[in-house]
Length: 157
Length: 161
Image (cartoon, helix red, strand yellow):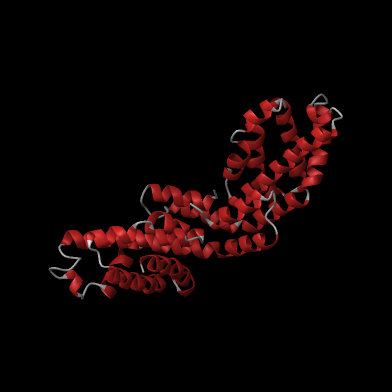
C-alpha cells in the first residue's frame, strides 16, 4: 500500500473526500518525488556494495554468527536476505510509507528466523550496518527519506 | 484497493526486482501528474455540493424524472439521487488520485446495476447525469484534470451500460 492508497482508504472509511491535512501530505509526497526516485535508484544500483560492506562491518562487531562460519551457502543466503531488505526499503521510499516493508518483509519475519536459528539480536546489528553503509551513499535529502524505513527495519529485529 | 504505486511495486516484488525500466517510467509519469491530481481533488472536495447541484441542473432538473411519478419524486428520492451522484463523484476522485480505476469496480460498480434495477432507478438518466458531471467537473478543475476525471466517470458509465 502507498501513501496515496492509505489516504483514499481512510477517507473512504469515513465517507468523505480527502481532508486538507491528507491532501497536504500527498502534495508533499509528490513534490519530493525526484528525491524519492534518486534515493531508490541509488539503493538499487548499490545493493551489492551495501551488502558486502555491511557484512564486513557486521562481522567485525559480531564474528560468531551463521553468515560468518565458513558455510558459503549459508552466507549467500543471509546476504541475499539482506539485499531483499534493501529492496523493500527502496519500495517504501517510492510508496511514501512502510507498508511494503511491513507486508513483505516483517510480517512473520521473527518466526522465520527463529526457525532458521538465526539470532535476531545479530540480525539487528546486521541491519544497522546496512543502514550505516546505505546512508553514506545517499545525499542528506535522500537519507532523510530513507532513514526512517531503515530505522523501522532495525527496530523490527 | 489497488493504486498505481502499489500496482507497480507488487509485480516487481513478485520477481524480486527493483523498480526499473518500464515500471520506473510509469511511476515517474504518475509522479509528474501528482500535483495536478492533488489540486483537482482539493477543488472537487471543497465544492462537491455545488458540483452536484450544477450537474443535476444540467441533466435532470427540468425533465420528467423530477415530476410526480418520476424517480426523483418525492423529495426523499431526490435526496437519494444527490447522495448517489455524490458517491460517484467521490469515488471517481479517489480513482483519479490513485490513477487506478479498481476502487470503482470494488466499491461502486459491483452489484450496482442489480441494485438500481431492483429499486427501479432508471439507468439512462443516471448516465445522462454522469455525462453532465464530466462537463461540470472540467469547468471547475480545468481541461487537463477534467480529462483525467473523465476517464473515471466514463468508467462508471461503462459499468452501468
